[in-house]
Length: 61
Image 1 (cartoon, rainbow, N blue to C red):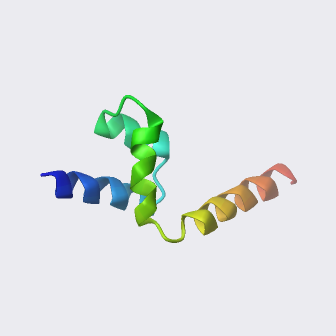
Image 2: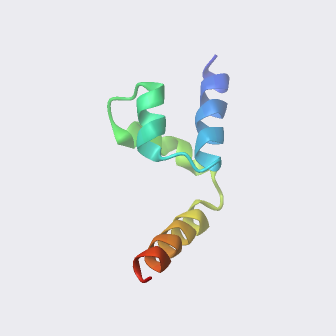
């Protein structure tokens, strides 16, 4: 069961789900608990930079 839960969280995050949404979905009391699932995302930094770039380009229009 734990493996399925872990896979579910990892897939949500890999698909671009917000960390807070995943936290609530899993019922975690602390965001730091949910952050442990981020280690499964080798390109998490790239995803974060891309998201930041998209927001900056929207705001500069």
